[in-house]
Image 1 (tube, rainbow, N blue to C red):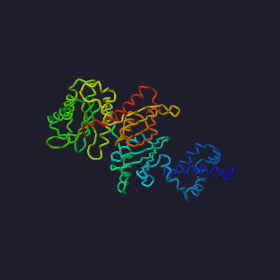
Image 2: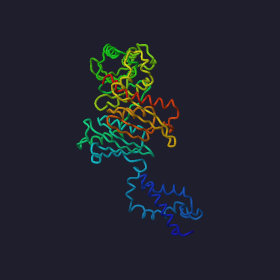
Image 3: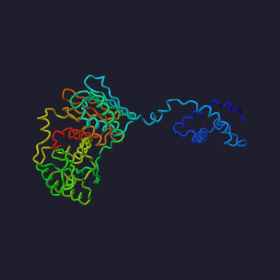
Image 4: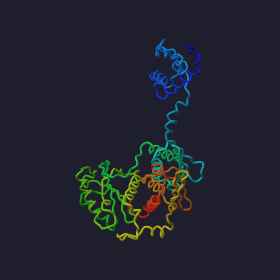
Length: 430
């Protein structure tokens, strides 16, 4: 049998492998021998099997020759880099850095994390919920990493001045990364209610007097309207209302009564002849939580409801409701027309979406929300505001990794983004 010292260098390599895997598993004592046997099976060579001679010694006895040597080498010192190994493998825990010194008139918020679909929307949603105006932003989602820079101001147009506000932003974004579940469009009726009240969502063709009819119907059903949010655009209506029992002021949880409310409101919504499909006009209970701090959840749901009734695909001049065409209102009274274009960057596999319009609060939330709900992934983006105008550029792909290939797909993106930007102009009530 050969002298094991001749193979000491290979033994050391093998020992390092054992230490590395043992540290990952955090089971040093129990896992130690298992790793040795497993790697010995993988590297089935004379050196790693300690020159195993099946006719002279059994394998277990030979492991004992190596055991003391491995104990001497493995336990006295561990490289500190091992402590951050899980973070380097799975990505960092969300890092939020707030810089109040680099830019004179804005607070710079930098967000780094492992990439995840919807993460950009969640961060933008938090900033919007905190009434922060995004003046400039650079976004990169490439290579599995989320790297974002936001230049923001508070609702008064100033930098974040006090430490309390800065800490609040950091905590809110951290909570979004771990806990936020953005509402998604649902094709079924969810019977979940909040402790305070019951949410009802409605979508229909808009017409004069519709809210009076809805209010009268709920009164007949002995319901209080606690809170309501609604948008009207291109003769379409989307509404989320929170109701309670008229007598007890408690949420309504009886399935039969909820079904009655849904049927009654659906009948009211469909009581007109329009180009909107009958199936698209309905009332359903929803799982939206109302109250303070939840407004962007409701607004995202309103965007989804509008998208589902195709408010982007109706020419206002063909409206039979008597409502004023929205596009004329935007062009003549707001003074700046919304321009959206889609270009190809096929050598990189992206489609480039460009948006130019009048700047306003919550604009980035509206555009990002629409692209995400249309199942597009945003890989890079550049957003800036200048002299009352907003310029946004998004590099997107479909969920299958392909860019937009047809004129129909590009036209739909353009129409949906235009509608998302214009909906707030004709907001009915809030």
